[in-house]
Length: 552
Image (cartoon, rainbow, N blue to C red; front, side):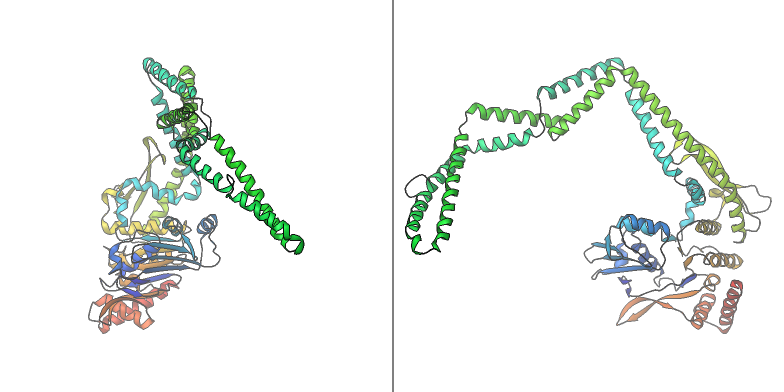
């Protein structure tokens, strides 16, 4: 990162496993996450740029490329082997320059690519669980391998069905309106046919009209050219002829003069050809006013039709074909309606089949998902949790099928399961979201997960459980976590401290990789506040040792 608000220039080299970032409130943790978001193609927030006097530069380097990202790079002909470097520069003037391995790409491509590389889970993300419409998205993410291409196919089939229904509905006109439309279409087709349009004629007519409109000027200029090049004794042709005769008389005295003689002869021939062509062009300029008006009227006819049916003769003729097809439909209206009804029936049949397949997969996955979620939630200190995935049928078709998914939960013994979006508290939702993300991460190719203070609202034994879950997730993913909880920070494979410093009378944010002793000191600060006591240091050492033992 370079020139990003309070960050002058810094480099953070994260490790495999669990990377922890801690620091005082306001030290710049959100700034760090903002920089990652920028490198992923998110919209630039001007608050991140400070005075914006210098170019901002953010660079992300990956030493592993997931298959989905590799396929995308190949599709866009972007070379990548063992390393992937994403760079985004935002100039002081606001211009964006995005590069992938030194090749310039668009911001939209950067977004698409980084979606396969990083997932960021923020502080308020768990609030999406309160939106029951999002529950289907979580279930589909869980069984996306089983679903395969069916979601895309279903969405496409849904749009085809809706278009077929719309076309049939709009076709249902009464007899009087149909006759009116037929007459109007016949008039329009007749108007186009009467013009006898020929593709390409407009360009020829425009050239003729331009020539005729400037005929006097053309004739005057050509006449002057003839006068200068071949019309009298002082013309270029006459003077060239005299020069040839002079050379011819002395050529026998110097053989080298034959070259000059040949050059003059060629000039004489060119002047002769020019004068003949010029005279021929002048003769073509003789035309009557009736010819000029005929060309002008023809152009007016074409331009009038263009204003009604298309910008070119080709477009006008294409529009005529559409109108003729519509005339045929209206003249054979019964057969046309039957075809539209068949189109709707075929589209509905295809959509029903895909929706049925999706429902079958989702119902099977729902049972598995509920069981896995219960296990994951117990590991997060929901000791008596019951989690269910309810699938009901929607009233009509949607682009995602005909399934409505809602998660139900009971966190206390003897308590009936109720909708998750109605009963869970903020702290509970944070843990539930963590459970979701860790489960889905196991079935996702994305290798780097970033958790931005998702531990809000939890403490004590629950915090310890969350820390253990985070450590477990880090065994198969690179996890980067910003936290205020010492229980989570103690689990770090690598610990970074974000803090503000003053250099040259300027406040700057710096990121420091902590040694073991520095980790203990930071944990003690998190445990005891501003004053670090021996008891806090001892507790920090114990927490670190316990984290090490749990890993073994």
